[in-house]
Image (cartoon, rainbow, N blue to C red; front, side, top):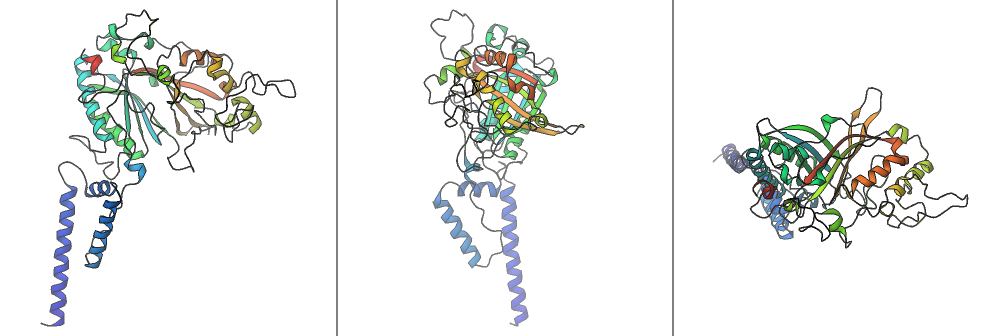
Length: 449
């Protein structure tokens, strides 16, 4: 056989093999369950060192055989493989560490929709949230946006607004803790971006994973509910600092230093609704469905960054009452040192000024009132006047907002030095029931009791 004929046969054989490889890849990508080959390989590679070793060996063998195919897929990183459980005593996204990306979205039930439609909707939403949080595609209508990513610590949290109980004829089971928040003199609230029948908080450490969940849940709503408002936020990406640190807001301040910690003995009492009412409670409210739940106060707080950044570092620290560099109180120590509120400087003045944010918001200055702050920063562009539309999507969690958020905000409203540099532009209060048990959807104990 001539050299030319041998070369042609060899080339044809390679083309046939490459064509079969490409076809196999396409068939795997077109699997009916919507999971791509890359997703399957990436997930398998993330299982452990053994999987990685096999992948490397397979790649070396293919290379040695002279096969023309893409380089081996590497394992998902730690950020991609991290998962949060959907089922549990509490809903996810409350004590979960801050996410790099978040979406807050409120829905109103459609005209004519009631308890039956709400129940079906919560069932759909819960099924999608459970699948997506496990790194699985959404059933029936997955868009493929996040096919190549792992779950990335995705959490989805559901809540009910005050008006939800009117729409579903469940006013007899509406807790008094959902009474409207009182007005505050510093409020500049936009009703179109406030409140809502239903509320969802989405958090993930990958922006595409978070958007995928948002899009899936919006499609799940179908004709039963329509979006009332949506807000998008972000935080620092895990791993961006040498070690885990308290997040900074867009003013550059550490935000969340004085948060109650799960290790504290009274944490659950402050953050979660107890399974049984306290012994000194005479309430006859039918709110057993809220056991293990919490109340979320959501505020869009615009930061007047141009004004803030004109202040010297010293003046900024006096406004907050803490050092900007490390979050320590101006009276000394480290970030976690308790502020010595009575300390007076050589000039005879309080080291932490009387109107400093850290002083006014301190639990000891508010009868022990405390809330778990879990915010996102936001930036929604530059206004016509050149000022940034940026600030904080403030989300705080407490067992009772009338004992947590309200007394602290009333005090801040009366004399917080920070008030001159922020503006509250939207507000909402939502009852977030306890976590769903296996085989249960979120809110089932309310809607099907």
